Image (cartoon, rainbow, N blue to C red; front, side, top):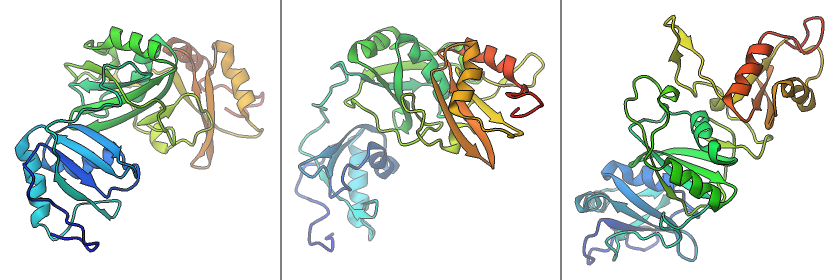
Length: 315
C-alpha cells in the first residue's frame, strides 16, 4: 500500500516483532492516542512517544507477537490507512524486540509516580481517594488518571523525588484502605514505578485530572458530577462519600461572594489550602480544599444550610 505522499505505509522485508514503529504522527502525539489506535489489536505493555527530531514517531510494544502481526496485516489490507488526528500513520515492524525507556526505566527516581491500581475499573477509585492516600506523604501537586491495557492508572506529581520515593516505598504492593472503596471491590493493589514525566500538563480540574497548585484553573463539570461511587449508610440509603474537598453551592445571592469572603468563612474550621469559584447553571459554586477529610467534614456539618450574611442571604 502506498500513501498519497509516495511513502510506503509498510515495509514488508522486516522480521516481525511485537514492537511496532509508527511514523508521521502528529507532533507530540500522546500516549493515550497511541493506545486508542493500537488497543483493538491486543494488549499494549509499553509505549515510547515523541521520538525523533520532529517528535512525530513512536514505538508500541504488544504483549504477543501475533497481536503486532494482526495490526500490520489489518492495515496492509485495508483501504483506510491508520490515522491519528486525521494524519496518515506509517507502520512497520521495529528492529527491537522490546521497548527500553532510556528516559526513565521506572526504577530511576523522579518526582512523578506511575501508579497502576489493580483489581478496579475507572470509577471505582475516585481522584479524591487517590489524593487522600498519596498526600499522606507530602504535598501532591497534580494528578492525572487514565485507562490503559495495563488497567486503571494515575500519574501523581510531588515536589521532589525524595517525597515520591517515600510514597512509593510505603505504598507499592499495598492496598487502598477498604473503607475508601465501593463494596463490590474485593481486591485493590497498587503497583508503583517512577514516570519519565517531571511536570504534568493539566488543562482543567475534572474527575480525571487535578492541579492542586492552581486554584484558577477552569473546572470541567465532570469534576463535580458523578465522580464518586455512592456508599450506603446503616439505613441502606446512599451515603455521600467524604473528601478533603468540599463543593459549596451558594444560593440567594444578594451580595457578592469572593474568594476572600469564602476563605474567611471556611478557615474558621481549619487551614484552607485552595479555593476555586465558578458558575454552573446560572448559580455560583466553589471548591474548597482542606488538608484532610476530618476538617472538611466538620466544616460541612457546621456550614450546611447556613447563611454568610444575616437576613438569609447567600445561603
